[in-house]
Each structure stands twice: as structure tokens, then as C-alpha cells.
Length: 140
Image 1 (cartoon, one colour):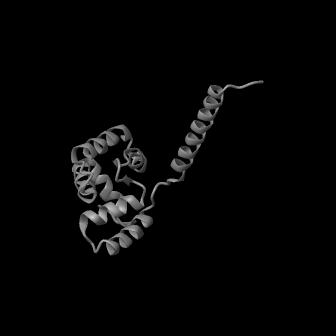
Image 2 (spheres, helix red, strand yellow; image 1 turned 180 degrees about the horizontal axis):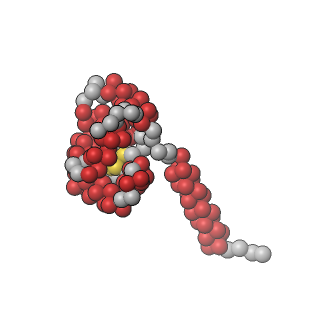
Image 3 (spheres, one colour; image 1 turned 45 degrees about the vertical axis):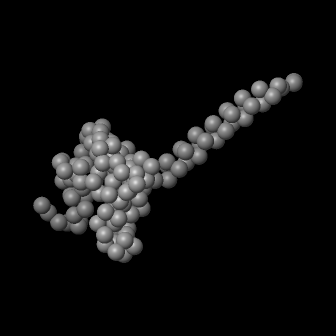
């Protein structure tokens, strides 16, 4: 068989696309739901690293938990998975994405993270976050 240069390029493009899909799927599968203990551990490290500055500490924490990127802000799908037990994943993702867009400040990612967090947690989601962070055994 005699393949043309165009056939070769097509095959290589397909192989590269499949490789990219596989790498992306692998990277996505590495993320795990954060446990309360991990959140507190990471929070302590972030407080030290940022000298307890509120916006920088929050951004450090959510980055370490895999819930934030400086390119797109909060990772709405991952956040929704943490609170899937509330059966409102779509609504939560809408809120997080809305707040990401509304508060976006790419030149000041610490402030963006803090303002988007305040926006998203101003309602029912804020109660869920507080409940998640309560020490085990603590009652309302």
C-alpha cells in the first residue's frame, strides 16, 4: 500500500487526538472528593503560606483541593460533586458559574476567588459549606 502525505497526516492527527483524550481523562480521574480532614490540613498550610491573608488563603485552599484554576475560576462540576447529596447539582453549578463570571478578575485571582466564593455562598450553598466544615459530632 502506498499512503499519501495527506493520509499520514490524517492518521497522525487521529492518534494525537486519541492521546489527548486519554491524557485528559486520566488527569480528570485523579481528582478525588476532598475529605473534611484534608480540607483542615490544607487550610492550615495555606494560612501559614499566605500569612493568614483572607483572599490569598482561600485561593490557596481551593487550588490545593483542585476546586480552582486561575484560568477558569471555580470548578463548578467538582464542587457540585462534593454536595451531590443535596440533589441540586445543576442549580449549584449554575450558581458557581454565574459567580465566576460576575466576579472574574484575571489580574487579581485572590480577589476573584474571594468575591466569587462570597457570591456563591450567600444563599443555601453557604449553609451546605458551613455544615460540611463543622467538626464531626457538632450539632446545629
